[in-house]
Amino acid sequence: MNARLDTQPCLDETPTSDGELRARPRGRLLLTVSPAHKHLAMRAFAIQQVVNWTTVLGLIAVHRFYPIMTPASLWQWVGVFLASWVLRMGMVAPLQRLPPSAVQKSALLKSLPLASGLVGCTFWIWTTQLFVGPELSLRELMLFIGFLGISISMTGMWPVTPVTSMSYYLLLWSGISYAFWVNKTATAPALMAVNASVTAIIWLNVLVSIRQVDAQLARGQALAELERSNQELEALKNAAWNTLQTRSVFFSEASHDFRQQLHAAKLWVSSAMSASKGDADAARPLERLGQELNALQKYIDKVLDFARIEALDTKAQPERTTIQSMFQSLDLTFENASIEDGAILRFRRTSVVIRTDPSMLLRILENLVSNAMKFTRGGVLVCARRRSSFMALQVWDQGPGIRADAHQRIFEAFHREDESGSARKGSGLGLAIVKRFADRLGYAIEVRSVLGKGSCFTLLVPMTCVERPRDTVAP
Image (spheres, rainbow, N blue to C red):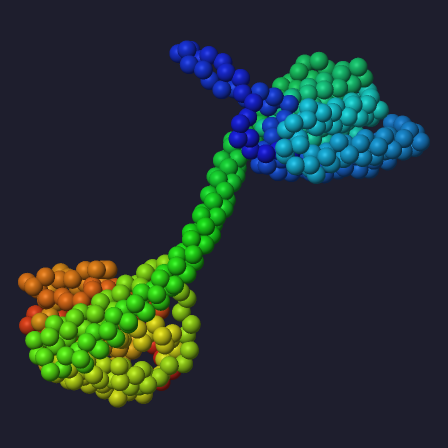
């Protein structure tokens, strides 16, 4: 009744017809120990007690109309019932309270269901001797119905403790049959027919119970396995998170030291360039070295940013954000790059206000504008416009364009298109970072491009995030 799922159950090995060894459970006839069996047994035991009390109360009520004993004897019978019921409750209590491992190890605890069943059978056999009379009356019919109800309730115990169930059936029906035969309440052929019918009813209920229990146990075991798997996954997740936290601290400290070293190298290059102003031949390599150091710094920044995004599950922290203020920040950021590259960077004024994570959105737009400035041959336009149920933040360029079959690949880390489509310069991480942050915010991103004319990257913000949908429409 009380139990656990044994990881190493006690087994006997018996040879099969083909000579192979087959595992057979040992000790399962007395009591099968598993949580699912315990639940099933306790439910069946509770139903059995309801039937017991119903039968006793029914016999007391019927005895008023068909008395067969004195009131003192009747109350004595009631007292014995209460004593036997309390005794049975006391036998079952340890099985319900103790953990399955304790029941599995104790032969005494395993034998308690059988002992409880024998106490119940003894009481009911004695009851038949008191209530069965020479004539078939409502009293005997009530006793028969009660016994049948008790037997049916015991079918739920069969998968858990077959020995207890079988003993209960044999003793219970042997007792009432003997009482009917001794008191000449029923003839021998009638008793044989009744017992055959009862046997068929009980057996059918046992078969149904076994089938239902098998399905319940299979589901219970599957749920237990799923719970264990979830616990293991949770433990692995926690371990992975701790590892990522440790690596994050390492990368943070390493990147700080690396940036310091790189900054020092740039200062030395600047000093050397200042010292060689009169020597053009010496200044050109130093200028080129400075450009390479700047490119290296940008590359390292993107690699570290991408590693941080991949390693940490950064949650978006939305707040009220004005798109125009973000455009102004981008304009200041790319002002020098626009002058150096000769590209015209324009922002269409907008009054759109959205709820978003401003740092993530700014990083997305920075990477899109940087990508557009890198490849455009004329200008770059940044704008916001309404599109059905979305607010579209768009970055237009006049670059060489992107082939249609590469529209998805360009968002992969370290991916750069070859010269046949669009010559992709840089680290290959800018658009990968854009895609990661867009996914974190729940935004979609689209690419439209015409080879030889330019491209348009569109970030689709759901209108549910927009507070003021008035927008500026791009030409």
